[in-house]
Image 1 (cartoon, rainbow, N blue to C red):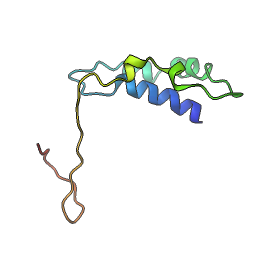
Image 2: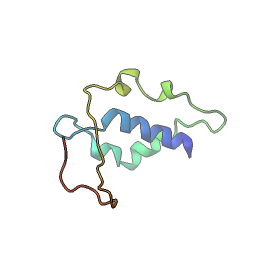
Image 3: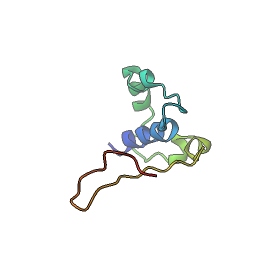
Length: 83
């Protein structure tokens, strides 16, 4: 399970971002053949090093973005973004 999660997180590192700036190949990511292809890269006898799964440049932050989750004193999430 952890090996499958590594591959999913590698895709997340590659494609997560504001859709105005990042073109994530959504159809590819949900394609069963893509999942099967990823599954074939898993060796049940050994852990795959992270560097074998993803490119170093893909995991580097391209542009610095910060996400804030804001709640008030009663735990209610903020409905409007704050800056």
